Length: 342
Image 1 (cartoon, rainbow, N blue to C red):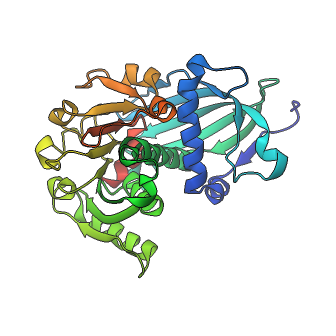
Image 2 (cartoon, one colour; image 1 turned 30 degrees about the horizontal axis):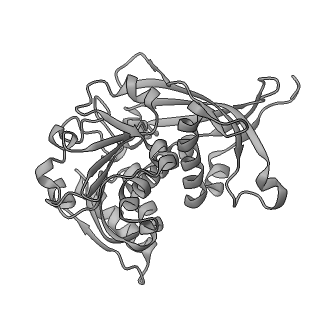
């Protein structure tokens, strides 16, 4: 690119048209594996250089700027992106996601999104800026896809190599904002969900999501959907729990979970820290997994349990949890993505 050529711009509408769950899930799974493989990689293998993200506090509380640079080397695109020889070509990418998180935006007049994200793409030959991509949808989809991949390997694979295609599950969604809605839709799309339990502090949002899911699933849908009056009711029979709120206090406790164990929790949100939604007595019984140690070491200070492993190492090694284990995937997602929904 020369100095007279402006960077390409990919709008949110353009990005939205290109996203689908199989594509995003495959990309996220590949990235999770590459983060771990990069530590001892063979020549020409895919690898990732992903330093911990920077967080800049702005003028008022609840106002932050996040920067997340990364270099991905020698990767191949997911199989359904291209056909023929193009599908086998290795590529490298230098990018930085820049995200502003202003928690008071939904209270503006008119209301504004609390999260605004853009992804900057650079030439790996010259370092010049080549493209800008609207990144809010990518951020949301990536967070949900990480939960899907975590559930596949930390929950289903403990029951066998094809369990994600065969086993019926009960899913609890705690927090029916943007992330809760996306988790509900994606999980019903990717897995056999026999029961979907919804809880939200504002009950109206839970009923709104229930109606949305009934429309998505149609008359032939086999999923039973229930709006619950409290978190305990939502999780008591759940195999998989997705909790995405901005709560400063625990919403679920060990006594709320199934007595026999065998529960997986995707902890997506957080209030003052990334782990306030889930009670300490659950962490004390659970195996805790993260996507990246680098971010976890700086952002999970005080976590009431040791980190068992990076998710990518589980995928690469095939060493899955025991059938009766309680597992937690501690997401490093931006918590304010869903603040305006809970």
